[in-house]
Length: 418
Ligand code: NAD
Image 1 (tube, rainbow, N blue to C red):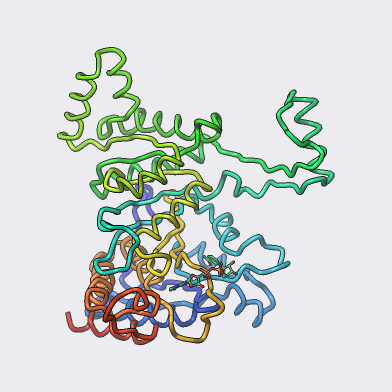
Image 2 (cartoon, rainbow, N blue to C red):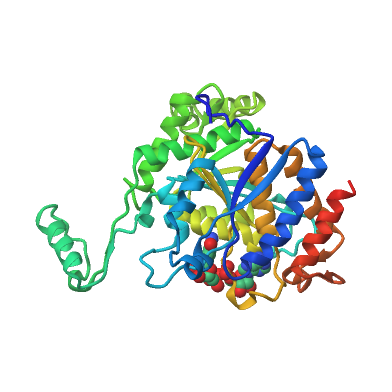
């Protein structure tokens, strides 16, 4: 990555991958066939990818006795990007989760999840095609910091005493039996994440960025996030954005009509509207008025719920891609958003599309857009033809149900024939 934040990508590229546990090897093998076909089709040998396997998870533990070998981390650090299948969360291995460890070690502060509808995918919505959002979830702070103490522990008692004696807190309803968790939310952490969301909105010509929060209840953490987000838009992006704060100021000073006029003018000029929504209303709105939302910026816990709710609206985790990115250093790990689905491991049944679309995000990230397009188009074509894996076939009429490997082969063949 150069000083302007642009990636310099060699034509012969080594990309590290972690195949993953459970269904990981099956979906990786199906996805790799499509990636290779798409790179070959797009560049006819002028650009090439060499895949370098990195060990992590059960495979690493079984072969070298470590769940997350240092070499794996070092290789990702030096290569900037990697792609991974799902990893088992080790029980009693000293890790809360391998994914969380990877995110923390590389300070991957954005969890990026684009959510769009593929025509023909079974969805619980009447108009699923109206859902088209880019979710930016803060990935390093909030209650995910892991500062939590069990009820009646020495630490919890100490903290409760401190809160009472030093800070005069009288609001803990049952102090003797309360577990305690801490929710750190910083200005730096919020601002760098919202900045990435606004920059992506500019790059992708999106109409709005919505700050989703619970600032009505958590005034300084979630409310701070909202305030810093608006301040950032006004301080750094005033030429390309119009914020709801500005609207309210005009309304207060000049009346409703002038505020509406200013909003319309900003829209005509193609400015990005910066607005905010309370998280609970937002969850209602994404079902009732999904067309009103575009880029979403939110804190860690809200983002966790929102990502899965939105994924379900357009077909579920079998087709939901994800990436964990540090836009300042360039480090990024692209990953299937589902888990290892251990009960299906070895059956060659489930959907590799989540990993495939994560790969499409990766190729977009490095600027190989032709490869991204071929991957996405091959999935679109397969679903349109109702040739799908069991998770979709079960919910479609007259679908042709393929194994995971057959689905990968079909997509690779489609790519080669373009
Ligand atoms: P899971 O996502 O593995 O499975 C839940 C269900 O989702 C499955 O039973 C299956 O019906 C469906 N599903 C999952 N992947 C699918 C696919 N590709 N296509 C179609 N349907 C799919 O969640 P879980 O059972 O709660 O977790 C199993 C393990 O995975 C745990 O060890 C957990 O910690 C881990 N996990 C890892 C990640 C990750 O690596 N990113 C994420 C979540 C869970």
